[in-house]
Length: 192
Picture 1: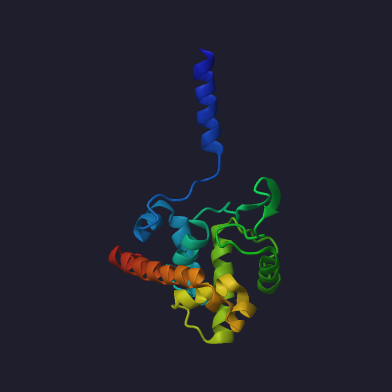
Picture 2: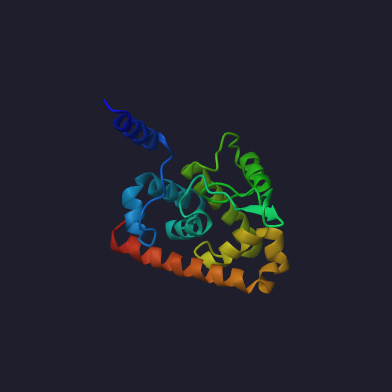
């Protein structure tokens, strides 16, 4: 066997062993559910446990990580070239910060929970959005307001820090739109 063929076989094998890529066609909730039935089951379980609709979870995960369990925030650079670390400790499907994830694991009694596990990430979102609903009275179907509270933290949301961030309000509006789009798509294909 030639060395080129051996190298091609090795590369193919290594690619197959790598992490699972995000689903294709992220604008179609039915396609996501068909490609990753495990994701849909996790979200349905979270909806049953915490009351957060599947479409809201999907829209927030889309915005935060594009369904990439290894997603991290970009690096920051001094003088444009010297790496200074990441923008924040946000990681995983839900882009949970280290401190908030630690609070979740303690409060939920889930010490082994992983941000790159879809079941844990959706349960985290349910836990967090339940806290938001309890504190601010935001219905769990309101993806826009939940996203603002999710992004800014409960304290930031209470202070209205998002009001000075027109870009963030625009993103939250897109999350709401995507949530409604996903809801209609999931209804049309019988997933909800």
